[in-house]
Length: 296
Image (cartoon, rainbow, N blue to C red; front, side):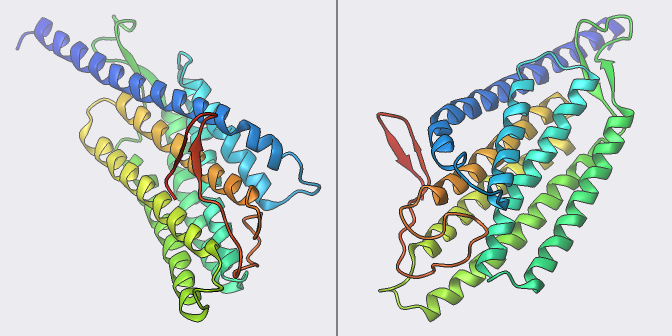
């Protein structure tokens, strides 16, 4: 293959990956902004009226507006500096979203110190690994032309020394979310055995469904992103996949908090583990003014 044919093939590959990445990123940003507009009235009603600062409200705003920032960045031309900001915002959003379920898990275990210690140690290990990868990526990132340094404007992308190592944060995410899911489901099974169905809180059913739904979404996306890390030759497509996972983390985690805050009875904060009987918790709804779709 001569140089011209090789350059044409590299350009075609770069443009194809870039087109798919932009499509994923733009779609993720559009879905997030649409969901933001749908749920903003609920946010104003339930999240801006707290008289004191709570863990749930702090995590809500970090997950919500971290995801919002990363979604906005998707629509901007990205250079190395903005790419590093985007990566940081994705990490912050995913960590805060996972913390929502972690705090909820700790609460339903009646705030046991052993459960808190397990969650903290696991979280610190996962965050430490992710921060190490992020720091290495930020310190070695540069704009690289896909064809030749003499033709940087044809198709270029952000490249760093972190290649297959990007799979580590996804494996850590799967590990951490698996632990929170197992702890949540184990406690729910204990409740179902001890508490008669006639007086059992619907909170346990809602937590079961929300936890399984959240885990299923993120497990599938993590596996897809791990596949992209090992199989894609150029990194543009990885960015689109990670942005989709970030947006869904933010959307599902904040809807869990809004669902609890808007319930007619029962605990309204994720750190409240009380009211396990005779309460009714509304399922999470994706709705507009004219339609309503529930997955709970």
